[in-house]
Amino acid sequence: MQTNVGSINDMLQQQPPIPTPPQVITTKDLSYLKDAMSWELDAFKKFHFYAEHAKNPETKQLLNQVGSMHQKHYNTLLHHLTNDNNSVMATIPAPPKQQ
Image (cartoon, rainbow, N blue to C red; front, side, top):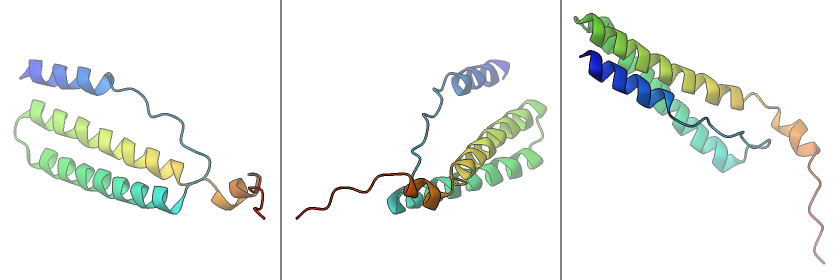
């Protein structure tokens, strides 16, 4: 079982970091973020539930690790939503008006 835990840990650590999000969040972006947050929260809750009911300590540890990863992703997405969208929009020049 240790091999499986080790290989999953390696896989999780090799993922590239998320690039810097845009300064402004569009309505469509917000919809995608809400969906992603819902999926991450759901995954976190499921892994937490399974970890509580796991008998094998290695399985319990792995489930907790994966659950923590999903919680971290959820918190990262939540942090991206803390931008004050109105103040950022005010700094963007308006497009030229077409005549």
